[in-house]
Amino acid sequence: MRIKVIGAGVAGLVAALELARRGARVDVVERSDRLGAQACGWFAGGMLAPWCEQENAPPEVGTLGQRALQWWPRHFRGTVCRGTLVVAPARDQRELDHFARRSERHAWLDAGQVGKLEPDLAGRFHRALFFAGEAHLDPRRALPAIAARLNELGVPIHFGAASADVLPDADHILDCRGYAARDALADLRGVRGEMLLVHSREITLSRPVRLLHPRIPLYVIPRGDGLFMIGGTVIESADRGAITARSAMELLNGAYALHPAFGEARIVDMGTGIRPAFADNLPRLIRRGHTLYINGLYRHGFLLAPAMAQRAARAILDPPSGAAA
Ligand SMILES: Cc1cc2nc3c(=O)[nH]c(=O)nc-3n(C[C@H](O)[C@H](O)[C@H](O)COP(=O)(O)OP(=O)(O)OC[C@H]3O[C@@H](n4cnc5c(N)ncnc54)[C@H](O)[C@@H]3O)c2cc1C
Image 1 (cartoon, rainbow, N blue to C red):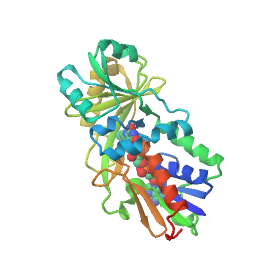
Image 2: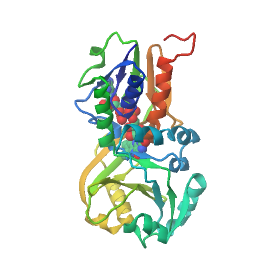
Image 3: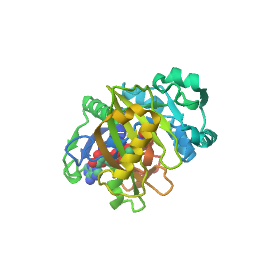
Image 4: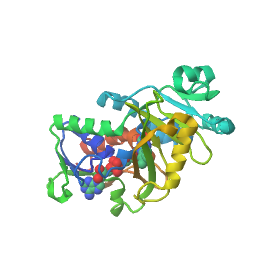
């Protein structure tokens, strides 16, 4: 069984690994010349937060997403399992109550417990929600680690290649082109997400911290070595252009409200990714002849890729009896 996976984003790489582990012969084709150069996932937070996401996502996201909490630590050693902390400024405490009502598997912390968990936030928040079972990873390390694993398994990634030139006689095509697949999936839309990467030696965090705010909720995710990712806007637009001044100001203001040390942080990167989404914001596996599409991962590519990859591997390798293999 020879399978061509188009797209070396998180959906394509995770699916290629699931297929190769099950003995399929897989080739991956990536239009850009290096990993992440044109992938939305390069700008992602990498939060594996099935319970936090229940606050504004359909329940399936939580159910499917829980598989990521086993899959990523098994395949990427850099997965950090230290939970998520959710806080709100004193004037926005109602946002925290609302968040608690709409999510589950959290514990309320008082000021002392917040300080024990994140010493640099001691005295800044008198209560918080803690989602102990959640995890996070750095996409810019996780994607290369999955690519390296594929290399060990003998799965080539053809960079800078046109799909038509690679494995033209593949038995199956798995299309994981993200938003670029809108040429075939007419109801796919793009949702712009902007982020910043900053460097500061003045503050240490051990886990993603979400700061709730009625207008622009944001999160700060530690990447190690003084790096922090600040994200992310959610804008109904497929405009890939650079981050706007308004978004940068709002994200930086939010980080400053979390801790004033972010005022002195150095900005090391800014970026924009286009999240692929369907109208219901749920992922889909779509079959058209010998082509299967994984798409619509929206805000949850790292969270949902393992479950969608396992579904795709089953659909290709264990087709229901009577269906074409
Ligand atoms: C700011 C931001 C924060 C986010 N935070 C999180 C988070 O914390 N947790 C989470 O789970 N998700 C998060 N996401 C969402 C996540 O990044 C996306 O859901 C995910 O990247 C979608 O994956 P994908 O593989 O479908 O698409 P992409 O990541 O866009 O990858 C598609 C790949 O296909 C390639 N391609 C396209 N056309 C072709 C072609 N013709 N031939 C060959 N290759 C092609 C592209 O170059 C690209 O490499 C975030 C996104 C953004 C923007």
